[in-house]
Image (cartoon, rainbow, N blue to C red; front, top):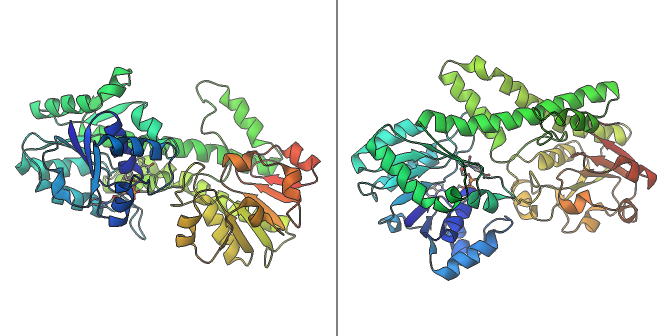
Length: 435
Ligand code: NAD
């Protein structure tokens, strides 16, 4: 089937390449000509494991092309809209400028019977408005939220946990769902659960899922605060409560908290939308979820100050990690970079390293020092902070690291190191929610 993908960022580029891998003829469109030039060369414009390989394969097959010319979507039966929905500046609400622009320019290239598939994360109620805007074109809108995780995006797209279709109650809605079933024939044949519902539910599923995940992380981080006040150990606590199958151990890792281009802005946009709907009380707990999350970043800086005897001014600090999570170069709302910036503002001499995210980090925080290698970053450091749990940092050898630093002080912002192991090697080890 010929399909188009509008918006080729983290979501769209992976989606386009994966759809070509599934055998479809795909045209990916973006307004960013640098991104399109890179994709056209078969180069992923960001770091995502597995993407270069499927991009190569899809480009070689001739089934995938990228363009900035939206008119090339004409003739496609299904159009996926994957543009960004960032947080509005100075507000909690989502900025829908890109979604509105993408839909209104797409309308001119649609034919009756086409299916437009919204994948961007939007406030509930958005799809209903977009569907009525599309009516004159004769195209049908399906809301099909995306649940991929950066770092696992290719696997999550090819083998999703579930697919959700929000469709209108009409024959056109049923036909649109059937067409989308053809697009997703391969994952559906694997038994992927498929939930067909109305627009409102489909939009809510996405933000409800992200709110739940954010809540689970902030819950354990709130427990970490209690552990800090009582001398208890949050990792043992998480292990113990996680054995209860109703709770589960996943997403119960206490530490520096969540970040990235989704969870923080999605829970804020959800709160803003609840306010508009007159049900803000229903989501007032998310305010606390957000606050707990942000407090962890402040606590991390406080720990650093305590470790340095009360002041970090002119202290040489090495920060391991800039990406918001490992296996990604995404620094949007990155807790690691936020802590690095706070420490810089408070007078520390901060050197950041990251296996993939330095280029992006330099663009956002050019005032920090950067090192391309771990060794260069920790050379002469009086304090080391592990803030993104890349595998190479998790498996660090304390003896090896000790040969570079000026002071053997480790702050583990992700609770991934073995405290005993580090202490035996002569390090002071501190972490969030552990003593
Ligand atoms: P992104 O910023 O990486 O990509 C958005 C892309 O859209 C950019 O390349 C931008 O140039 C392009 N764009 C903007 N306006 C356009 C237009 N009019 N026509 C064509 N292209 C246009 O964002 P992302 O992380 O890919 O997220 C996209 C959406 O998917 C968001 O709503 C996000 O919440 C949602 N989402 C993201 C993820 C994720 O892990 N990144 C997961 C699930 C859902």
